[in-house]
Image 1 (cartoon, rainbow, N blue to C red):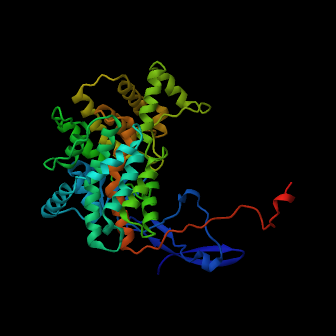
Image 2: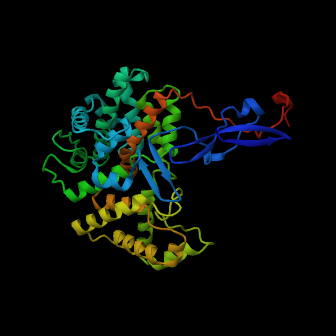
Image 3: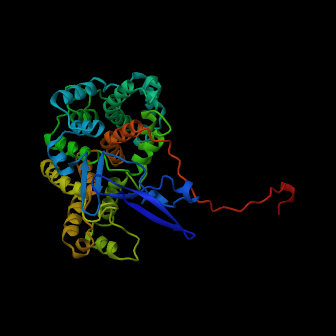
Length: 428
């Protein structure tokens, strides 16, 4: 016999079915709640609302677990390439050698963007934020590929997925080059996905950029660790926009816009800005640690603890080693990164942080890595978007294939009661 939940409203009892997920998560199915009771639920920010049944990512914040399609993130990050993980998220299983070769070659074939799109860059202000540029450029791609606008044409959707995976790094790197007045660097199909992005970001016509394998490996891991994270703000936005049968390009563009917000994708940027503030104040780490402990002080240490993970961020444990490897290999002497290492040491040893489980999270380490390899702070959220792309695509694809209805949240009206219109001459 299936489980049910009992709800009593005004003395009348209702039975609501319950659903158990594959990881034993339990949910009360309120699909027919309004029809049965006339009531709706109020859940500001949807913190307790399951908006979808999804087979893509499992996250347990209490236990510090993150799985992609059933595979623990520790194994995925250790052994997988970013495109292999992208294939897993989008299509449901790890690819065979033949499938991965086709996927990789198809993406390599589509890395160039239409030359007409270069004119768009010329119209943006010189210092336009790259997230605004990237969001609009992705949306504009649908006008170059009108066949992509039908979300039910799965043959064309397959091509759209490959185009997005291929062209987003190109568009992101071009946005960076234009912002600093450098010539655009075209992709090289002989490179891997991450190598190609590093090449387009840092090469110049005057010299070949030598790709450091330590940096390449760190970037590969960072993209994997950001590839999906259940129903967060940007992913929910992609699904919501896609539920109207909007095309994949516009849905991803909306996800980029949601990620741009400082409460979502801007966390690693906030880490560097905090470190620079400490440096500019004299570099006294102990002073700012005490400020963070003071409940009456508004200062907060960025990059410590996590809203979802109540114990530890499993991604942080993985990327810490890559962070150490990058800093050791490059031998960088940067006072901001020196402060970061001091803060890390405090957070891992100070009882105040240990007892409250305020450990460095993935945003802390990713911000340090990006700064160390020369990616400017404004590009940090773009890097997040590059990693999250396959997760967004997978979530959109799952939503379309499941035939989910258009998203339409309810509300509780708190405005005026009914009142009569008063002509302007009689208004006091």
